[in-house]
Image (cartoon, rainbow, N blue to C red; front, side, top):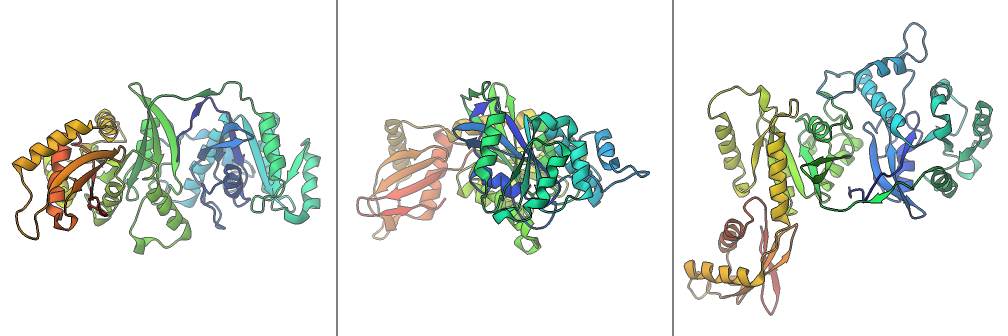
Length: 477
C-alpha cells in the first residue's frame, strides 16, 4: 500500500475474461503478492493498482475484473452486455444491485473505464482452444489494437501452445506464451511492456502525503466515501455485502495536501467469514492499517456501534495510528436536538480508552462533513509527526512528578530519572525509572494522558516504554 513516488506514470492494464490468471500475473510483475488470487471466478472486482518497476522503469499496473461479455444478450446481440454497460452511468452512489448480473455490470464498467485510460493493455488468454467469448473480446478490443500486447497464460512446458498460435490468424503481430504461476517467459513480456511505454513525462513526487485507510463493517459506506474523496468512481459501490474484496487505492489533493486513500473490504466477525476469498480480503483490510497514517473507522450512524468496531479500533491504536470515528449516513438521522452529543457520549462510554479519538458526523452520499473530516485528519497527522525537545520534555516531566509523586512504600517506591521521545508516527516515549517492577499500570496511564494533554498530542494514541539501566520493560498502552 505504499504511495506512488512519481507523477505522470504510464498505466498498463491487464484484461481478459475471468480466471485466465490476471491477478497471478499482476503479482508476478510486481514481484510480490498484492492481488487476491483464488480459483473461484470473479474474485477481482474493483481495479487494483500498484506501482511496478521493470528494468528501473516505474509504471502503474492495474489488475481489472474479468470481462463477461456474454452474460447479458439482448435480441440476439452477442455484445448486448457491453452495450448495456456502456449506456449506464458509473456507480457513484449506493445502488440496489443485489443480483449477480447487476454486480457484473459494475465490474465491467470499471474495467472499460480502465481500458480507456490505459497507455498499454495486456490482453490475457488461457491456453487452449479459443472460446466464443475470446473471439468477442478480440472484436471488441479492435479500437485498442495499437495499444495491445497479447499473451497466452498457463503454457508452462509448451502446454497447448499449438492452439494458442491460432491467435495470429486474428491479425496480432505477436503472441507471447507465458506462465504467470511458474514464471515462464515473463522476462519477454516485461521487455515488451517496457519497450512500448513512454517514460519521458515521469516526474518525482515531493512533499507530504497523508495515507488514509477506510475501515469498518460491510455496508458502512467505505467505497462511497472513497469515491467522494477522490472525485472518481474507482471503487464499486453496491448494497451487496462484501462487494469490495481487495484494497483499492486512490489519490486526491485537499488544500495543498496530498492524500492517498485505501478502500478496504468490510470486516466481519471471524465466525461470519466462510469463504477463502473473504478471509484474504479481511486480512488485507487489517494489513492496510500498517500502511496508513490515519484510519477513518466508518460507523453506520443509524445502526450504531458493535463489538466488531471496538476490535477494529483496538487494532488501530495498538499500531499507534491515528483514528477518527466517522459517523456515516448522518443525513438519514432524525433532526433532533443533541442527537450528535448523545451518539458521541455513547461512543465515549463504549470506547473508554479512546477518549482522544475525534468523532465526525458525515454523509459520504451528499458530502456533508467531509471538510471537517479532512481538516481533522490534517491536525492528527501533524500530531503524529510532532517531536518534543528533550530538554522541554524533561522539564515537564519534573513538574508532573513534583505535582503527582510516585506512590510511597517498600514495594511501590521508584524514582523517575529522565525521558526521551524515541519515535514519531507512531509516537513513542521512553521513560527511565529506578525500579521497573514498582511502576503500576495506573501510573503509566496517568503519565500517558498527561503527555497527550500537555505536549500537543491530544488527538492521537501514544506509547510509553519504561527502561532502567539493567533491563527493559514495555508499558502497555
